Image: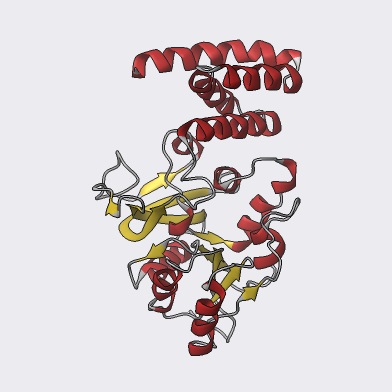
Length: 308
C-alpha cells in the first residue's frame, strides 16, 4: 500500500485538561499495528493541568509519530474558530482522518488497519465506524451494552441518511473519514451557531454512504467535564432542539423538522422552554415553513404518543 514516506492516515486528537485520561488515549494510538504509515496530531488547547507535559513526553518517545500542536491561548472559546478545520486538518497529511478526543480511547491494536482496508476496498464510502463501549466516569462503571444499541452484532451496518435519522451509528472516536470529504463537511461550520458531530456526519452522507463495522474497538467516556455529554438532560434537549431547527432552516430536509417538534414536546414542559420555542419559531420560520411545520408537528405528536 505504502508508496513513499507520506502517511496514509492522520489521527487527530483534541485535548483540554485531560491529565486523568490522556495516557490511556495516547497508548491506544501508539499500539496500532498497520502496514502503512500514520501520524498523530494532538491539539492541546492551553490546558491548565499537566496534559501538555504528558503529550510532550509521548512526542519525545515517538518523534516519528507525533506532530503535536500546543496552544498558549484557548482556541475553543474563540468565536469563529473550528479547531479541526482551521488548525488541525491543514497540518494533517493523511488521505484518511481518524478521530479521538483526549478523554476517549481505543482498545484494538488492529482498529486502523481494519478500517483503512475496508475503505480501500469500498471506494463509494466516505467514512467507516465501529462499535464501542461507554464508561460512566461518575460511577466508575461500564455500560453493559455494546453500542450502537438495537443492532445485529454479527453484521456490518450500512449508514445512509435514512439510518442516520433513526440511529446514531457515528460516534467520532470510532470514525475513520476521507479527509477531503471531512473538509467539505467542516467548511459549513460558519453557517451554524450550534455546529456538532451531528452536522458533520449528515454532510458526510451527502457525499456518500458510511459503514459501521461489527467489531468493538473503543471506549466513549461520559463525565462531568465533557462539552456535551455531561450536561443536564434539559439542557441537552434545548441544544438538540436548536440544532435540528438550524439544520432544517439550512438544508430544508423535513426530517429535521420532525425531530425539531419531538424536542419541542420535551422542553415545552417548562415555561423557559416554551418561551425559547415560541421566540425561535416566530423569528426564524417563514410563513411557508410554519405551514409545513403543522404536518411534522402532527407526525411527531403521534410518534410521541405511540412511544409513550
